[in-house]
Length: 292
Image (cartoon, rainbow, N blue to C red):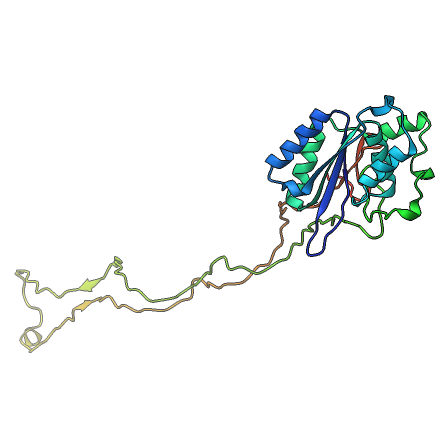
């Protein structure tokens, strides 16, 4: 299990991460992988513990030696005690310090892959054997410069080193605007077209009619008087008259209506997952309910 030491350097954020190993070969393999990943050798340190391990005869002076070897590391007090105990029991401490955020995740993955010690479980085991740990510092905490950082193992926030993740969500806002869908234009103009109508016309003609007769004149004087008869011919002609009549009216009017439209889109939001390695649980942050 790796631990985030989280110390910051002037001029930009720098992080440190440490891991305790039981096996020297695994610790060396982790160091080689860290170098191969592009992390400078100056940022990688490996502290070897007691060769005899837990079976060797231990003394307070020997434990103090391991404590002194960690004096220039910016560890929290409780972690410094645990690392010193692990070294006194033959462990190997690999620390990567002063690395950028880009290298931080890479270092975490490498150290987690190489069989690191779960420090919380190991501390519980040591306490069952009588180890007093941080609560009873045998070396005197007043003489040791405490670290200004927090360990991921305890998950305890510190006032001088806080990081936060903004929880962001998008909200959908729907407005309305007028858009043109075209126009209707009515234009009136005059055209001429030929028409044919049939009409029946009456006419009167005068014809000269001669009828041969053979009878005696009854009145001789009247028969030889001058006489004139006449008849006038008549004929009907077609007379064309035009009358303009309004047969239809065309106008434009606007009719307003409403309709319901469903808008489909996507909005983004931040969801937070909290991994608590103290009890091995994974949960969602209650302040960010899952969306459906």
